[in-house]
Amino acid sequence: MSSCRALLCGRCLLLTRRAPPSSSCLRPRRVSTRPSGFRPERVAVVTKTTRYEFEQQRYRYTGVNEDELRELLALKGSSYNGLLQRHNIHSENVEHVVESLRNEGIDVRVVKRRDYDEETVRWADAIISAGGDGTMLLAASKVLDKSKPVIGVNTDPERSEGHLCLPVRYTHSFPEALHKLYRGEFRWQWRQRIRLFLEGTGINLTPVDLHEQQLSLEQHSKAHSAGGHQEQTSATISGPHLLPIRALNEVFIGESLSSRASYYEISVDDGPWEKQKSSGLNVCTGTGSKAWSYNINKMAPQTVEEILNIVKRHKIANVTQNEGLIERVTNDYNESLIFNPEEQRMFFSVREPIANRVFSSSRQRGFTSKVSVRSRCWDACMVVDGGTSFEFNDGAIVTISMDGGDALCTVLLDE
Image (cartoon, rainbow, N blue to C red; front, side, top):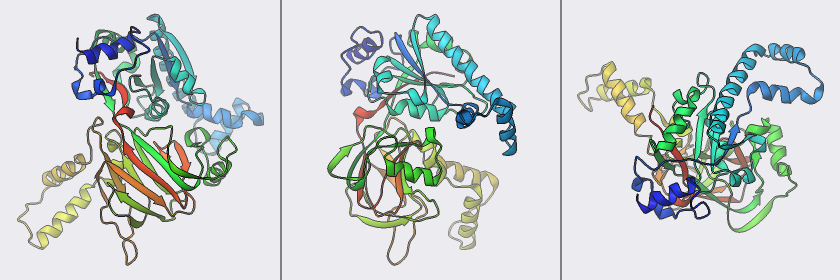
């Protein structure tokens, strides 16, 4: 066994639990596709809040009973029975995961997303997210230890894509997944993540949890003004402050009101600062290249067809246009937007840049290792993985980069 695998699996087997491996030992490309077995003693299972639970919680303090909840949901076109059915499916699959773990003698702590904190992360040898991709992003957000695995289980495969979760078959056969982990029939994957250094004026370091609070625009602005759940006024930070959160998918910067243009200055890879107005800026990882970034930049077959018609009309090239060609060009372009989650690079996208005498966008998209942004916005936010929002108004500066030590430890299982 190589020294790299011995250190990693020593943590998982609790042989050298208090000695985390060095970053050099955890480079994904040096890890065998058949590592030694992974058998944790303590696992935290982080579960999502279902829509049924959310609706119950919304009306809990107003004295609404189940029959009245059914009527309220019907008024807005939602099916009480449908929500309850999806909730039950999720709950049954969570119970299946928990029972499977306990049957193997593993100490399990089940936590709802609102109760998931750093103490839970420290207690656990591994984290399992039980939900969809959103729950996986939440579970990953608090794990800063590169040697602590985070594994996603899709608890409602019919309604959730679950790109970041184990293959769907393991939702109902989780013991099989566990035994593959024990036998080493998997591959470690370290998904690179984005770190954020914040400085400047008008900054509030207290984040707002968008998922948990389900805020309207007005409520979102008030939450930022109040500093979320803590009283904190806007301040000036003289030096770069590393935020205690890492982005697994992407970072988005823009005005809270989407119809308002976002005004900011941007520097890519320490290049010159450029004034821009746009619908916002998205910076993603290889993991996030299949998510929002992909949908921002992907090309539709209709667009390809129209471009080929222009090429043909101007006799630029002798192109024989057919459905097969359009499909190949579309797929080739769209696939070029996706890159390996283990690659230590980012992809930035300027959404709908405004180009005129004053503003321009020399590069609308591209790969980068560093992006710096200075806000000139009125009521903007910086959102990490679609769920955690930081105030980002005039004078705020963020440096967006990657560090190999921030990578998230996950596992890959065959279908």
